[in-house]
Length: 350
Image (cartoon, rainbow, N blue to C red):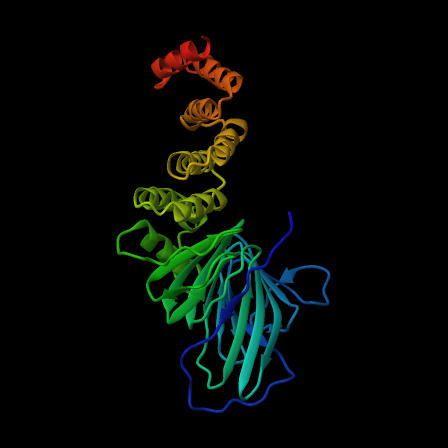
């Protein structure tokens, strides 16, 4: 699969009435602090080495964290990049002058918080992840990359996020958006107290703070928690007739998790939206077939076999429908759709 990199442009809206010296040489930043397993790889090194506090960082250098590792990188302008566990960040480029600063950072996987310092001049910071294209403007935000999915939480200021499709969305303080390969960023969602989103944000804030107590099991389960939230939110969107958004959200759920049950449900729900709401039996059949062929998880495979049979009937594929309905009876003799399937088979066999 070709790797596409996400560009997140970070531009603070506030300025300081001060002058900063021109910096064209010297380190771009340094490793201010870290906990747990943290490793560095300079652009001239051929292997990773254990990190040391205060280690200078230059363009081309990379920082990687282990299962319990967290690292705080402080740039020359005061910007702080906090890398959570199981994450890898490359400083691709950095420049600081009196009237402008620029930087390019590649988060190949994991979680990071960027607290961009105040600056009186022009800022052009970019953060890249392996999937979908996004642009960010703001002072403080958290990004999580999981496979092809990206999740963003606005902590302070305004963040502009755009996916591969459509125009950017404005992510403000206390909101969340997300995207995946081939999708647009979803309209920002307010993070309400006591919700799964609030729980996820709190765990991400802890994971991206080298001094905060953290429960690693909760951090490990974050992609699955967010995937389940996406399933619920996708149902809400479909019920609200926001079908394209629902399809994207179900796809994000699929990309976030490695759990077969969630993946199967996400595919099944996409098939339902295509068949019931968008009059697209071909794409619906593709989603159902994916469940049947790849995910041996109940009750999703049972519903996928039944739904695929219905689509075959709609497409006037009598033999294909009979094959699926006969499989349904063989595999699920007491299935919830058994009586309906019996009727369909009798009609098709006439």
